Length: 467
Image (cartoon, rainbow, N blue to C red):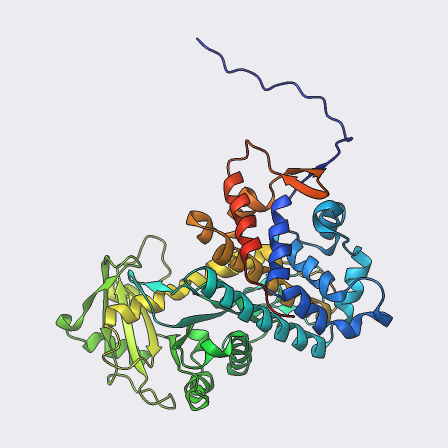
């Protein structure tokens, strides 16, 4: 019998020189420069630089965003970048970063958002020149026209006393931020930090986040492009849907697809739908979804106060084991989900409209990944600092999204942050000098060395904005 060989014996020391870790994260820092994010942040935060001395506040903000995109969780994690000046240059200390965050008031926060929008316009132009532009979202095995915005809230637990943190509806304690992601690319367009007891279905909060998200979209895409806003039933407030409809008067071709509660009138309508009007539902790849059917309830349910042309659709499906069912679902033996849309007749079958709405579930993955990119842990007792942290977390999500869209191919172009960090960002390398140049030498045995080298090559080829 052949035995498994033991691992080689090692002698561990701490005197290594010229070796760097997380070398791939230099991609993120350089991409921030290439898209103009560093310059835009510098302009936005220039008033916070005392007498023009010390660290550039914009550079500090970008370093924080890079650290968060790399998987850092606390301001102290800036040490990883600061202790590798050959790769990341001069990085501010943790106390300096704290002072910057403390100085970001509502006016500076608005300037940061405008800076992100400026960089986003550049990134989208670069995607148009070097790739095929912004990819189309997909549902039911086909590409959807225009842009799709997904709005959803999440709970973030706070383990210590923080300003405006409060008890949540799930009996926890913390914040209840409302977020908006672009389904096309996974970019984080907007976020609103709220107390833990903030209402899930607040029309005012949804309007605020949607307007902030639309402000992030470049003018060339915001006007003249179909924009679908998706949300769960928390986004079905009449004021919010009326606001979406009113956007059309401003030249924004907006429509909605939002969840709706299964009320008693809806239950009665479902029972009256003849069997021959139920149509097979689709899976996201376009195949038939086993045991699921869709039907339209428009005209069978009164929808007072909603925009004209609002339609109501329902999907029924055999419940999977362990599914939470209402008494009505138990009685019918099927699980029911209802949603509203103002997509006119003739612009998609019932099956397509339903599978398009169900794709809103992807926002849960965006939020899960966002929580590993700064959104899941707030560093300060002060609400203002935590609001600034949220904005930089959104910038970190954007840097990862732009890296996938501009620099990567194949499976890495759709990879979640965890995979990107493991395969690219956390790669080790050796620093050498020669011919008056600094060389970053990726190990010849690293499995994804060619992907990382190709990403750096594409980065150098990106057209730069005029500053």
